[in-house]
Image (cartoon, rainbow, N blue to C red):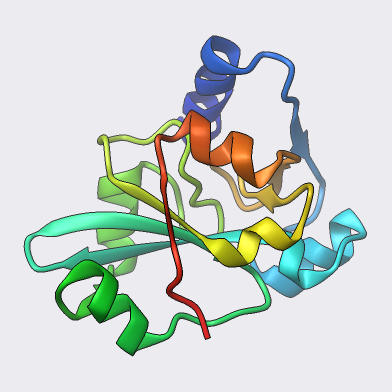
Length: 152
């Protein structure tokens, strides 16, 4: 279902973007970078967080970590990572395949400025073995994302 919802998302909004499916897992940044022949920073990891009573997604460069102080300043409260069940329920995507496309529920999406270092990034595409190649600007535009600075 999850990979299919991402397929439908791109078919409707950006049919020129192809989903890449591999025979191996790309569920971690290191696995994905090796499988796609890119540096870890180009892997756009999508983090599912709860801030007060709302669930949000933050897409960051794969080689960076969230800065809790910046995150709290930007979002106005402390954030916590969703549990595996919460991730699946809110996004419709399994951990390792979470992306800002084809979501189960509409969620606010934030893109960290760290992604702008690259002309092309590779977020997952709804499964642990799928991804898309996309510019950070197009990803943000397609998901109505807000640009933030929340990484170390």
